Length: 339
Image 1 (tube, rainbow, N blue to C red):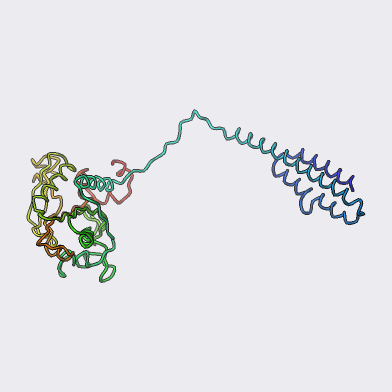
Image 2: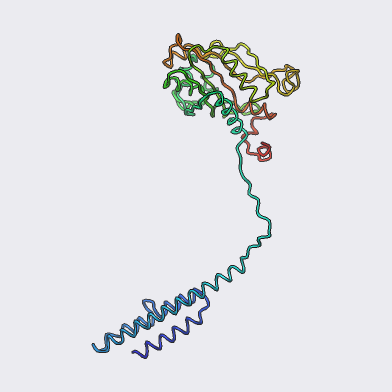
């Protein structure tokens, strides 16, 4: 049996030396050292040996197994080294070739505009406040002094989820939520997405972006509102920009006004952009209605405030001369790459 073991070792050694790949080497290992391998079959016959022969043969068998394992390990390392060299020679990298261009993304023009607006108002001491886009009828209308028969409450204007839940039509509900939780002084802006049941066209979209501002404190007047909006327009449209107030009506402010800015294309002299008027409609604003303050737990006899709201999409369209709001949502890279 010892002779058979030595013969198996020599046979295994020869086959290992002839193996040219990892797969061939694995087959040799299984042939000799596997559960049904040659060496295993020989060792099963040790039961027929005498008690004196058995330890001697077992010792030889262990030596043979160890030798075969060493042959396999040496061959495995050699084959791996050769395979790596072959792979490297076929996959050589030419470091002189030009690299591949990486196309990096960037902010959408509406997000760029929103960030610019936020930075302007943050520089004036405003804090950014956020609120839910799925809103209650109370915060979207009732808390803001909108009467039950107000046209904006109609299903033709507002997306209703159920009788008490809607997609917010403005970011004004954030103002009501903040006033409920905080005591004055309050100075916040609330940028975000809004939703109205509009048919998409060049100037309307069922989803759009809005930024609203709110200041509540003792002694706040219309002059504070005017000064704030003047600073904003000069930063956003240019230092030569002027503004004017036109009387208007909003349920949550009293008095209310529409704010116009002098045309930044013609500096107010009149052009096709401003339709010859020299002025461009920008946003709505006014002094916070006493009922709104009262609904939010703030005494209108002690505190006053102003609020304003602007469409971010509209402002970005004006600033960059975009004539169709739908361009912002069509994902046409030819358009988006211009910003």
